[in-house]
Image (cartoon, rainbow, N blue to C red; front, side, top):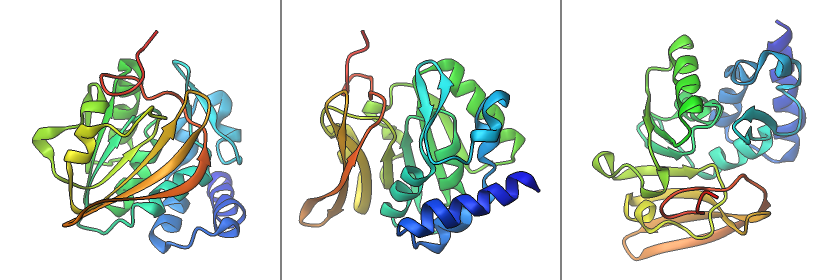
Length: 214
């Protein structure tokens, strides 16, 4: 009951108050137990208005940014979504409340295993996981109705654009290693259209078509 109350307060104060209006996104974030995606020591901070460390120099994003990116995807119940960067698994869990199926890729094995364990524990069986470099996408499952990248890229990976269906949407942070712009792409029969949703800050997108791992 405590965490349920904190979830509802998070949605009201951090999301609705800042202009998140998609009822499916709000419902998903009232439902998914965010505290289970962080360590036990951080559970009481899980619904705070900030990112939290999850190990391996990675973070679980601030709730607002999760909601903003999810809303920007304009998901429908029949959509197939590709997520690049599973991390804690929280973003995928939110997507899975709305979309038909979520394909999520993680390059750090310990995070991949931990997230899969949580998905199974919570019976999120519409989430398909893969341990791999996400910058090259998941070609044999493409095209996707939506693609979300949860790490900052130096440029938009061509492979991901190629795997976006006509009518599909992509949300990706693009910039340098310290700050990025959140870019929304829409693919239609005439090509790709981009919108800048504003500044953000993510960990690096490491991979073949991202930053090189030092």
